[in-house]
Amino acid sequence: MPIRLGCIADDFTGATDLANNLVRAGMRVVQLIDVPAPGAHPPVDADAVVIALKSRTVPAAEAADASLRALDWLRSAGAGQIYFKYCSTFDSTPAGNIGPVTEALMDALGTDFTVATPAFPDNGRTVFKGHLFVGDVLLGESGMRHHPLTPMTDSNLVSVLGAQMRRPVGLIDHKAVAAGPEAIAARIGELRGEGVGAAIVDAVSNEDLVRLGSAVAGLPLVTAGSGLAIGLPANWGIEPSPVAARLPAASGHSAVVAGSVSAATNGQVREFLDSGRPAFSVDPLRIAAGDDVAGEALKFAEAHLADGPVLIYSTESPDAVRAVQDELGAADAGELVEGTLARVAQGLVERGVRRLVVAGGETSGAVVQALGLTSLRIGPQIDPGVPWCAAPLPGGDTLHITLKSGNFGGPDFFTAAFTLLDEAAA
Ligand SMILES: Nc1ncnc2c1ncn2[C@@H]1O[C@H](COP(=O)(O)OP(=O)(O)OP(=O)(O)O)[C@@H](O)[C@H]1O
Ligand SMILES: O=C(O)[C@@H](O)C(=O)CO
Image (cartoon, rainbow, N blue to C red; front, side, top):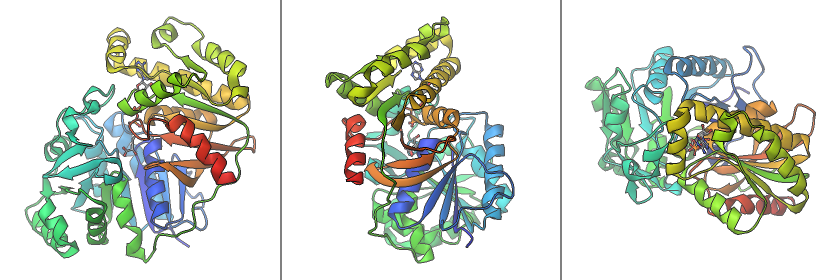
């Protein structure tokens, strides 16, 4: 059977976040790492396929190109609607990539209008009067203003997206959203008439997203964080299923690889360190100086893997990250750390780790690619937006892996994740 919904996610943690919300709303979902070869068969028994790209921070033209290849494949697999998933904190720069990718997809689909909303109320992301809130503060006042690659200092998404698009950007405000699908459709008609190509949509609750989901049933393209996913499966008559997403039983050693420098990950690392568990800190300046930091981390891990989860982390405070970036440049520092953590993850799996937590979107992309994973089955949710997944390793074993977005998860995420996996198997 052809798939219904085809999804393109701009990073790997975001892809599992989206897949998780679709699964919770009843869809059978397969997440593919990167675009399959043209002509590759779509997975059987999937209502939706999420193609995970690593396109959030690459040059805009590259991101558009990869997204168009994903679009071609998804359309050939039968997708009737396309969902472009970006971060719930709208991670981007004036050069892109949310705007340029949206426009490339609109051009290819021949559509004149789409919606844009990063709202994900379950994780405290709400949009009101076009302004994005992260918890109780505006985006530009949140930790995102310090993000190493995409610092977000403007909370007004109409202006943020407007700076990235040729087409005019408008707003579907909360009055229309609260009034229901017909009012939203009427507002879409108005904006289309004014020549607006994309509209930021207010949403402060799951109910708003469900109303929006119904209103956009006929749009060839929607763009959003993962939140809108809860409102789409019903358009195909699919209802939430009480059957939890089941995974095969997990075995092997446990480890955490954290390359995220977000506020939530900083808290999770602190909590792990405070609990006295084994942890190894990766110093970017030592990597740049040519030290074998990955080798040292693996030696450390080898000595501690038998004692439960081992943490290898480069996570640091915003000040420490800025100091490193001043010395190495943000992009080079990021690449060096990602490469090292990806080698560490490979080494951990070679040493018997079969339960792996990865923190950070870019970091997850680097790790998943280094491990040669090609598809993930989505399992139980650990915290909103973060499910366990099972992936076949190239050697034939199964790796249980969770890709945690930097700012997701409770303070004890690094231990709670393993407890949940044990419970799920019991
Ligand atoms: N100590 C450090 N100094 C400088 N850069 C670092 C350091 N630690 C990690 N980085 C880089 O910062 C970037 C963090 O991005 P990543 O996407 O992995 O995490 P995040 O932004 O917190 O998560 P998300 O994208 O899921 O919100 C990566 O490129 C990583 O290599
Ligand atoms: O939407 C989010 O916040 C996450 O899924 C994500 O994309 C972080 O990388």
